Image 1: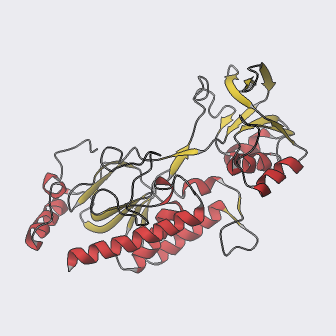
Image 2 (image 1 turned 90 degrees about the vertical axis):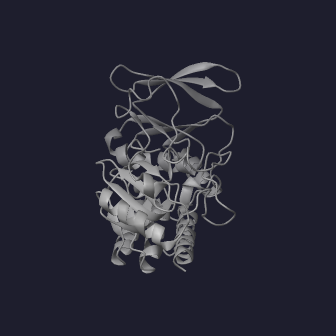
Image 3 (image 1 turned 45 degrees about the horizontal axis):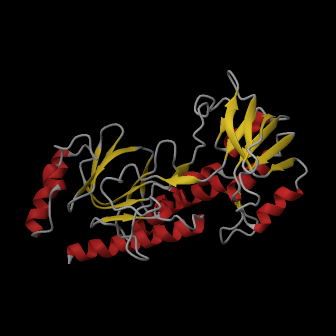
Amino acid sequence: MSNQPGIFANAVNLKVGSAAEASAASEDARTTSADDAVHDVVIVGSGPAGYTAAIYTARANLNPVVLAGSVTAGGELMNTTDVENYPGFIDGIMGPDLMNNMQQQAERFGADIRYEDVVSAELDGEIKTVTVEDGTVLCARAVIISTGSEYRKLGLEDEERLSGHGVSWCATCDGFFFKKQNIAVVGGGDSAIEEATFLTKFADKVTLIHRRDRFRASEIMQQRAFDDPKIEILWNTKVTGIQGADKVESLALEDTVTGETSELAVTGLFVAIGSDPRVGLVKDQLELTVDNTIAVDGRSSTTSLAGVFAAGDVVDATYRQAITAAGSGCVAAVDVEHYLAALDS
């Protein structure tokens, strides 16, 4: 919720009424907003969903403003290596390259992409308001939430303390710093095996730690781990502690079947146990699912508030792929176009 509930009270509380009332509220918002405009659509977040929504809404002459984030622009694909399953790239494409291509395509059609972080939003009423970190408030008739997901943490006592000192959630960001070292990766999905495989380019040995006796990853990814001589797999094992004064020195482990404890000497720990939808901005305003994703109506992007749409991993607890996120962004853009056309008719 907004930290300044008094600002834009007229705009935020506006209900569907006469065109004159809507115009008056819009004029009031224009005089108050530092952005000095009522936009057709503001897209919060980027990644495949946000950038695709930007491409489609820009081509529909809706002049979208994309608040991509100061650090998170491009989403999780900015932290990946080869993307081999995105259609159209026979030899694959690097995640950052794919996101940069999408961004440039959106800008080609006139999308206004801003590297700013959203700190609050008021989504009720016909005119929505979104506040960014420097205090600027943007008004919009429609908002698309494409905030994606964030890395899940182990929840261990020293995890945060040793973050950047051996603990990482991004192999492509930090792998270079672990040349000729013994390191560990925690997880059992595609992302964990991708991280482990990538890290073998630098490390002497990568121990892949998984709490079960089989991986969740796809068969092709599993085979890569099994075939890599630098990867050792510890089944039925969980990390119970991270040890080291100023940097990671070892991990405390526990066998999930026998309860037996052990210690593993490593200088780095890469956590790849999944991610959680970024719903903090809207959790008190939009209906959520049991999976903590934003609830949408069927195959649409329509949320529990009129004029608010959602796309990408923030609505998807099942597939969570770049291609499904992009398709979701397309859905949101088309839904916005139809919504605004209905308002103007």
